[in-house]
Amino acid sequence: MENNSETDRQLVTPILDSKLDIARSRSLWVDYAKAIGIILVVYGHVARGVFSAGLNNNQSLYELVDSVIYSFHMPLFFFLSGLFLLSSMAKRDSISLLRSKVDTVLYPYVIWSLLQGMVEVGLTHYVNGHTTVGEVLSFAWSPRAQFWFLYVLFFVFALAILVYRRSGFMWCGGIFIGSILLNFFAERLPDFYLTHMLNHYFVYFAAGVLATFLFGKTNCIETKWLFLSAALFISSQWQFHVEMGLRYSSGTAPATLLLGLISIGFIVLLAQWLTRFNLRWFAYLGQQSMMIYLVHILAGSGCRIIMLKIFGITSVGIHLLIGTLGGLLLPLLFYTGCIRLGLGALFSPPKLLSISVR
Image 1: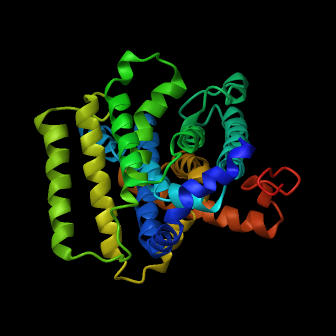
Image 2: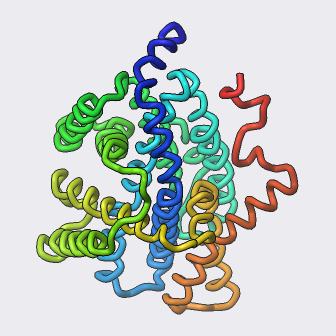
């Protein structure tokens, strides 16, 4: 594959200037979209922890909100990752790009799967679940907790590097259509964890790649389009969850995919609309979404354990509020402390372990 590096560059070079310009112009709304996504991720996990601890007795409301969030929040991150594939391929050959993903995706997956797993083993008597050392060490083929996303994302990138050999609209559109078909007929394919997850999530990544051709260089949109997308989002969620009585894990593939894409479209337009406001703190949440994602389970669970075991707080509202704030802010404080203490290797590989700098 090294011999094909020049060919790879020639295939993607025609889109270099335009795609890099668009990538730079959309960075702010992408940060906002990531911020929305990571807030939903943290809240969703906090709410699940509160429910598993037996604090929330309103099961029907909990399941409805949980399904609405999970119908699109992780697909959103795959979509956003796909937005930058073509510009990344324009700057790097296939091998260099894959190496960079080993450093930025696979490395933190391994480190934090082990770290969080061992903490959960040590705190088995205080958390909702029961974790064994064997389960922690099986991360190579069986990702645990929130880290499944990094595991699947790495292989999504690996697959994308193989199939996006051209950068034209027709080629990318064909891959998107193919990914839709794989998503629809996933149940008829061999039921292996990785193939199942790729069939389910690659379509959102491919949608992000295709969306590269649809976005202009402006961040802002007219308010009327935001209201239209909000109405479509609300009506589709109502139709799926209330009228059809479905949940994100039980709906048919076409209905679930359509709901996910409509919801992602709303979040994208909302993020673009929000760029008219200078929300630096909000953009910072998006920029640090990876760090929050890595640590938020430990932070959120820690808040719940302290409030429940030490202070005896059982209010669902307080647990959701403090748990979500803790899940967002404590990882940022932890990351800052690690950098100051020279422990950055917890998040990115040192030069001796990095393969992207060779």
